[in-house]
Image 1 (tube, rainbow, N blue to C red):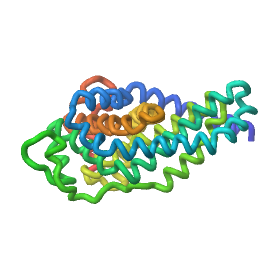
Image 2: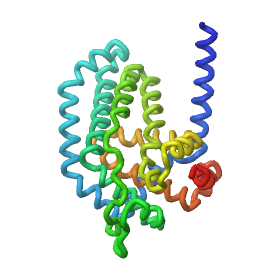
Image 3: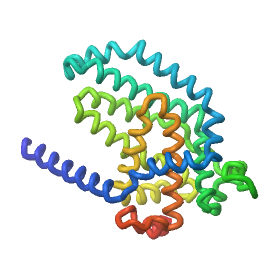
Image 4: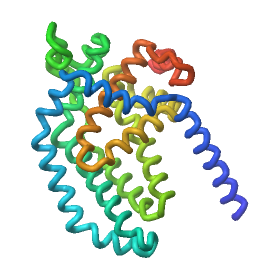
Length: 280
């Protein structure tokens, strides 16, 4: 039994090593950073965010206040046994992380889902991938990229995934393990988040579930690196709404590069277009 456990542990360690290596070599983790720069330098992309700013900030403040009032002390008490004198700090960080995640889920589900789709499509238009966007919505003539966006001709994306919430709650106790637990938590969340941020791209490509899974699995390292960077940004308290939009911009920039073969640096998800054609 002990040998079997050791064998499984070695296999998992090797798999994690390869995943980490692929993520680092892909360069996809840079897209969330590129998304910030691109968003800040293109004022037309601010429109979807500013239209939702007041209700989302109100929601964020309310959730953070509620979480500190009702969940900080119980979690600090538990962490006193695992983190000792650092319990107050780690409990505060955990509550902020929980608040940010809960805020992101609720805001994306009820407030900003359509705005994120507009942002994604607007970036694709700004990168001259009009044919792709026209697969999912009407495109008007003239104006800035956001002004060109017409009526959606494909149904909106699924707004709420019970599985995602259940999975998050299952991973949450990992944060009680000092340092290592938080790292594993972010890694697992990033592995899921990377592909989720390309859901709109897959929809525009008209890929079925098998085609999506084949594409994601072949570039699992790239998507994991991208997802980890996005998750870390969205964990920043109060700023998570801003980073939700910039991560969407980064995801759209990556999609545009895939479509146009603009990825020229060695190791940054090469031959994605060839693989995409095979998936079709």
